[in-house]
Image (cartoon, rainbow, N blue to C red; front, side):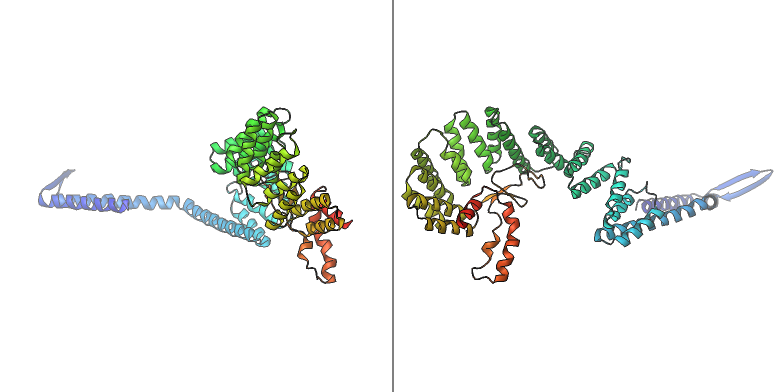
Length: 472
């Protein structure tokens, strides 16, 4: 656009110049070797313009002829490069769609047309093609070769990290992630992996430092950083509770402030406060957490806040929890257990039956079985209740990546992911899905399916105890 405007301005200026000369007649006289040449100014101006144009055209022709070998070579070089990039693009699409044969063909074609040191994607396509072909050793060699090139180093580290994750070599994976994080702290995958590695080995101070760096780099949103920080602080408090209750209290209180719904943070903070004889503040924290989520760990710690309390004092505390969360199965179960310990069997039975009405599950039947045994000693009714417990839905537990645990942990034992454990009902026992009038074929197939589920249940869990009692 600018060139067009410039051309129009030049033409307009020439037109004005010739018009100005036409309005002002004059002659140009040139004397050369005794001869006198006389022309008008208009003719002289036209002649000069024509000579300049002719010289420019002649110069362009000479330049074009002189540079023609380079121009022709450049044309074929660009055409070759375009063909190479077209082959590379097709190969990347083929690799993404899983067509290993086409990806390998296009990789070879692109390697012939484009130098690998000019286009790093050729190395990536080569490595991805090897992965598609199942040649993981060749892919690892290609990724390792990339480490020598500063431009490709991060790509090679990423590939080696993924390969180590595939093989389950978490130590090697964290090593490659650590190198990548040192070279480029903004890489999310590397920062997350180093954070999980620090948490996995229990280096909570390092994990907190990495979280602060992620927050400063704005790589994670504020909510995610605060949640993970609360988890790490809780884990730190749990690890130092026995040797330094004061530091554990400070860490757990900060975690509780960042994530009030994180039950382990509330429980750990209260436990540290109880160690420091601050019963009142610890109880307030548990009461606030109980209002958010009625959790059995909160109830157990709250009821046993004072080790020397009588059983009726513990029952009074359980009633206090029930008043904070009425018509909740955990509240009724807390009262039932405390009443059973205090010998108030009628109240214990009423609370256990209320819990069953609200949520008929395994733990409620087990408590009612204990009440029945203590009150009547009727073994038949006890066995009946234990059998119902086995068939009832399971109690909530800490679950992470298919692993069921009786205790909360900051990281998953399978993937190393932070804040992986959730308080929820584990996968139902397969036996519950089989109808009472199931065919022999279904009944015979059930144990083979249910075996992996039983493997996940803790050895001393109520499920195993109840099942063993019922079978006896």
